[in-house]
Amino acid sequence: MILANHGTVSWDTQSVERAFWYTEILEAYCRILLIAKQVGAVGRLSAEKVHELLELRTAIGFPPDRRQTEGVKGEALLTNAGFASEANRGYVHLHPDQLDNLAERIADKIGTRV
Image (cartoon, rainbow, N blue to C red):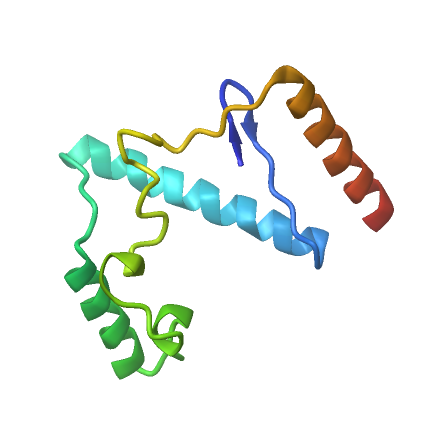
């Protein structure tokens, strides 16, 4: 989760280490995106290109992606396909009371796992 003007919050129900790795992956993605934007326009891959890359992944010896094993096709191949849509823009709008409640629940979960 990315909090406007604050940074990120990552969590996992299995371990703190996995939550840490989610943050690392997000940071790497953001770094790549910033560099790519300096080179030129950044666009989303089409479903056909995503399918090509998934097939290539299998062809070079990596295990199939979950999207392949579950038979996902077309636009559903795009992870977070609606993320950049005009309607969504990737934001979750919370009332301040909801945000406080969410922060408390996350803190409680972290406290019980440490």
